[in-house]
Image 1 (cartoon, one colour):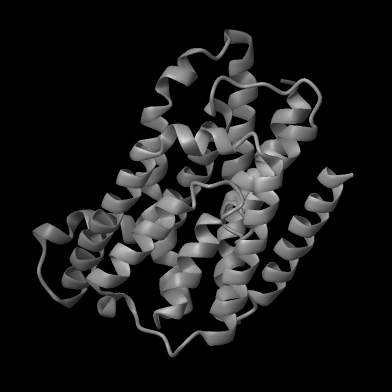
Image 2: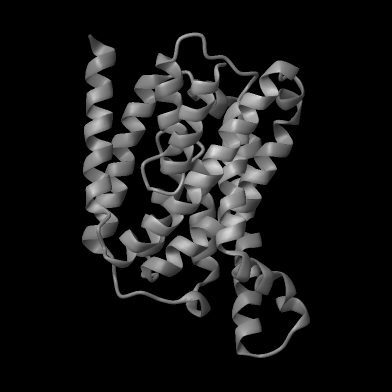
Length: 264
């Protein structure tokens, strides 16, 4: 892997992890066309995701801190954050069950560019429906067990490359009547245990990385982190303004274009 490849893929991950267009799908597409690109398992992809998750931890450091201390505190704010912490733990259960149960199946999908194209079309449909049929929003304190279980299941299925994790989880919460910014914040925070869990499962792959390749992995993760900070801010602004339809059109165009290209 070259420095340019690491920089490009880190930039791509930072842009697409939080914008609802599927970072994993874009990584599969670009890696497919990069000459000589190779990685043990999904080691490099996991490093890129860790970079963007550090961005989440920094951007939402106040929310994370309040959630962690909420079991030891009293008051309305503490109750709200304690409830959110419990819902994130609950939502992580179906995600973990799906990820662990179908790990090998999902990893095999990362070689299928046509599947990625079709799943991008599905992501576009989800974004369109959520924009078209979103209802008046509920805030953090009004999130329910049903919200957590449904969005956790959707996050587990979003391991399929081409299904945007942020796009699908935010879309489902919008369709269930959750406020846009609340849906985005919950989606980002819910990603933390999922990505760190995936990193633990990929330790064997990371141990196979050649010493000479380590700087490239760090460049990719660092770039994803820096660009991810900006992307989080951008998506929150987009969700507030109810403009997800543009991302739906983008997913349809990329998906359709890729299907056409791979059929030639």
